[in-house]
Length: 120
Image: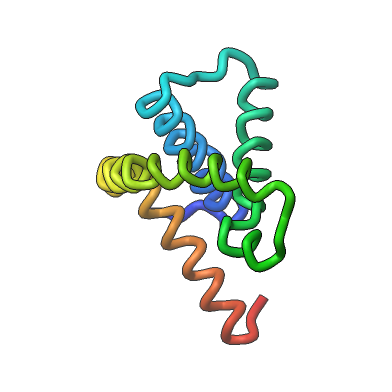
């Protein structure tokens, strides 16, 4: 079996696979499917921004005026966390059967080992 180069492996894992899992979760959990590339890009941007929001505990400690809004958003995301975890487990089980995923992971791990050993 030939391995993809590390750049292609990364693009495959974090482009194709991440997109399938992310958009699969949105579709299965919320019935949301982007219909254009711009919508897909916007959904990725929203997800990135939501990950950066402080938690309600951090806000209580800081006395933020946005505490209630963030708490409400947190309750929505926390309630869906179990559903999302199940979706991720299902996607991982499905994707683990794909030989290209295995080859991509192996390629990246080999590159990581080379870098750790001082080889570039």
